[in-house]
Image 1 (cartoon, helix red, strand yellow):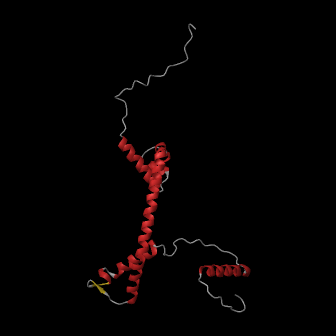
Image 2 (image 1 turned 180 degrees about the vertical axis):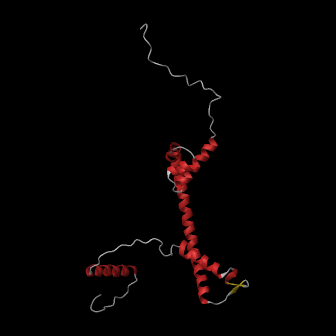
Length: 186
């Protein structure tokens, strides 16, 4: 083996670290960053959006989301979000009768005086706008904002079938008590 060159190189000993060049991570800052990532994920942001917003790499986002602790935290955050949603819906349901009372006062045109001002002290336009928001937007009773328009060919047989199934559904719900016979048809 004399004269031959050794093709094997030994790796540098990594046990000896230059402490001046060593990067120190702040565990608190890392935890906060992971919490931010998980919160954004639960809010529905895509991984690429999280990367852009926080200035981290895709691996960091993926590791935070897919880790065991990350999955547990996501589950907990989703449960809290769902609980908050149920609570908000219950509060909206409680506000609907109050909003309907405001409509009734407006439509009755009776200048009720509560606290020296008509309609509880707030301008009637503001009360109506608030009632509109509660009833229409929050309770989901607003007119649809997006419509899908199409066409279909309805044959007389298909129309009769639709009527028949509608009557059956009304009977099941207790909305149809007695059917009237009109022109010899049900």
